[in-house]
Image 1: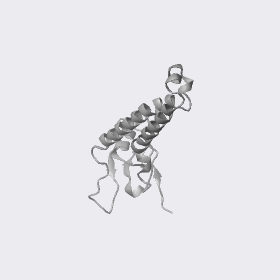
Image 2: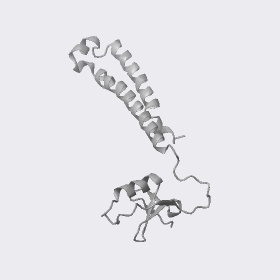
Image 3: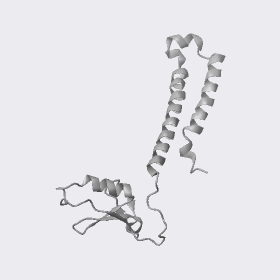
Image 4: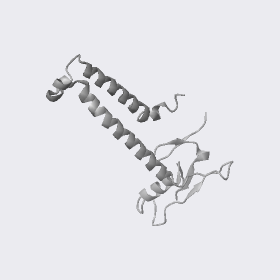
Length: 151
């Protein structure tokens, strides 16, 4: 069974050989998944909290069989920001289609809509067909990240 260690900042389980290691003054080792987590831990531990007034521990890459391997890619935070903005666009699209779909699914519950779309009318059937197509668009666009590993 392979031994794993836990990053104290983000809680990620990782292989000690692939970790970024920061050595504290007392000789113990802390394992981090990235330089960012190592810097965050160094910033959180200030003077009087287990360290004297010396600088924070320096992070160093763990030994690896591939020395050219990049441990922390530059722009990783920018990539996370782009992914967040993409997910927010998808969420707003789903909300913009979903809210009217919920209201128009039961038009007889709303005074102004009950006259426009009476129960059993052809207008209501056409409306439901259009909402079904709009729901497929939400499923395909907003839910696409759930289907990427399915095929």
